[in-house]
Image (cartoon, rainbow over all chains, first blue to last red; front, side):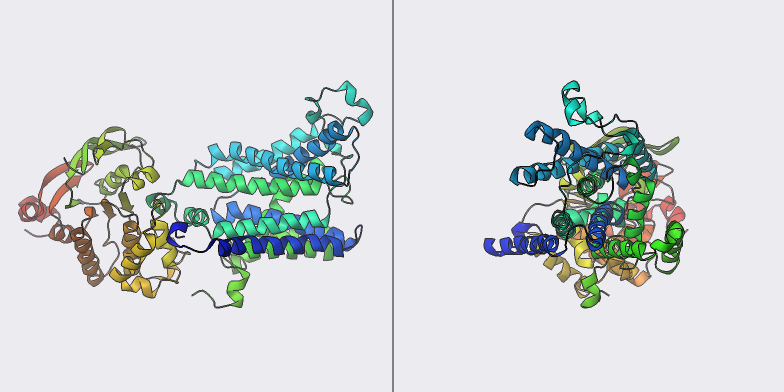
Length: 353
Length: 236
C-alpha cells in the first residue's frame, strides 16, 4: 500500500473509517449476547461458532497469509485459557478474598485483564516457538508446532490440583499458577464469559485481520507466501514478518482460549484434552476449506463446520473420517479452498480477473 | 571511487565453491554485464551482492561502505535493488500491488508519483493494473519485475537474466528499456546468458567461468575478442 503520507485524507474521515466499523461491529456483537437467552442450545452453538471463527481467522494469518504451516494452534489456545484462568481465579482471590464469579465492574475488569493476559502469554510463546523455526524453510514449523501443542497439553496434565479457597494460605502465591487441575482440568473458575464477550472478540479479530491485510504489513505477509526470494528482493525482512504473523495468530488463539475457559455450560471447559491435536486439526481444516488467505472464507468455513458437527451428531463417530474425506475432496476439486484468496464480497461484486 | 567495488569475493554452497575470488567494479552511470555459461556463478554474484547468500570471504563496498553481512532488506534501503532471475513476481497480487511492494523499503511521500511514472514507461502495466500479476504474459511479467525493482528508486539495479524464456521481439523491447533506464541515471549490473545482446547495451563486461573472472574489458573489446566470439557469441 501507499504510505499514509502520499494519501492525505482528513482526520475526521480517517476516524470514521477506522472507528465506525469497530463501533457497529461491537454493537452487533454485544447485542447478540442480549438477544439470545443464556443457557440455551442456541447459545452453546453460537458460542462454539464464535470461538471457531477466532481460531480459523487467526490461524489464517499464518497458514493463509504468510504460507507457513502451523499445526499447534490448540497449544496457544490452551496457554491462553490457563493463563487467563490463573488471573481470574488466583488473581480474583487476591482481589476479592474469594474465588466466586463477580459480575460487576470490578469482576469484568478482571475478566478483561485476563483475556489480554491470555493473549499475551500465548503471543510470547508464539515468539519463542516461531523465532527459531521460522528462520528455516519448509516443514520445520509444522513439526515444531505439532510438538509444541502436545508438550503444552502433557505439561498441563501433570500440573498440581487446583488450590481450594480454604487452602490458599498453605500455598505461596507464586506457586499457585502451577496448580492447574491436572488432567481433570480447571473446574472452579468463574463463568465470566457470555456471547457478548465472545462476539466482541470475534468482531475485533475479523476487523484486525481485515485491516491488517489491507495494510503495508499485510501485503508483506502475502508477498512472503507468494515468493520469498522476491519478497527479500524488494526489501522485506521475511523472517521478521513470518514471526510477526505467527505471534499475532498466537495472540488471538490465546484470547479464544481465554473465552473458552470461562464459558459456563461447556462442562469443565479448560481440560487438557480439549486442546489436543484434533483441535488444531479442525482449525487447519477450516482454513484450508475456506481458502488460504481469505478472511471471510475462514470465518464461513468455521460457521459451516461447526453447524455440520452439530447436525451430524448422530453419526459423530465418523466425524474425523468425514473431515478427512472433505479435505481430500477439497484438495482434488478446489486446492485453493472455496474462496481462494478472495473475499465473499469479491464474488458479490465484480469478480477479479 | 566506484559505486560498487567487489574484491576477492568467495561464496560457498555447502562444500561447493561457487565463487572464487571474484573482483569487479561498477562505476556510477554504467551498464556492466556479467556473461558466462550456466553455472558460471553469475546469479550467485548478484545474490551475494544483495545479501541473499552469505559470502565466505572478500569485500563488497557499495557507495563507500561495506555491505558484507547486511540483510537484504537493509541493502535495498541503501539503494541497491535486485530483480531476481525467473522474474519472481507475486502472482496472486495485482500488478499495482506488486509495484507498491517494490516501494516497500521507502518511507518518502513520492511513491504515488513514481507509480504514475512507471505506468507511463510501461503502458501495458497500467492497462493491467488491477489484474493478478500471475495472469500476465512472460514479457509483461519481466517488465513488472523491472518496474517493481525501479519502485525502490535504486542507484544500482541488479538485473538477473531479463531475457530468460522470452520471445526475441520482447527481449529487444526489454533491452531497449534497460538502456532507457540507464540514461535516466540508474547504474545497472546485468547478468545475461545472451552475450551478444548484453554486450550490445553494456559499457563494460566481465566474463565469468566456473566461479572465476576470466576476462574483463569494455563491451566492444570483448565483443571483438576471438575467445568471447568463439565461446559465447557462436561465431568463429
